Length: 147
Image (cartoon, rainbow, N blue to C red):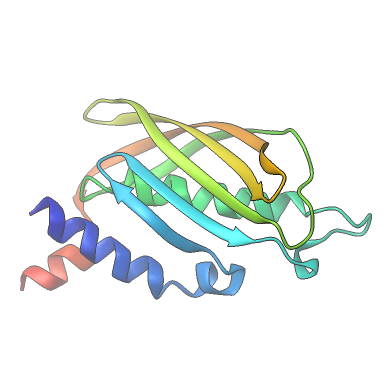
């Protein structure tokens, strides 16, 4: 059953219009865990020529969503506290890792980091602490697949 959840999530994420628009790809997923990546491009810059905070937030939110919904039940964001630490270089690969820190029936917390990966090594771009509310409801696409 767990493998089916992960395969279903992979399919849903691969077909998600916003993730595709942002060039975000799922690299890994497990219980309470997700790794995603995107390549930072000039289309993601703001008016001062740096990466737009919204682009980094989008990457964080995609990984957070995948990790928090990986248990097969609907999880919705309550709070994300993002600290932007550095601006990545254009064309660098950005990798985000979301890890579940705690989970109860209704609340779960996550630690999320965004790293720039390139020939000069790894550099932390952003750090995030996030909280979800876990609804007592299976993910809709899992229900559809079961019928």
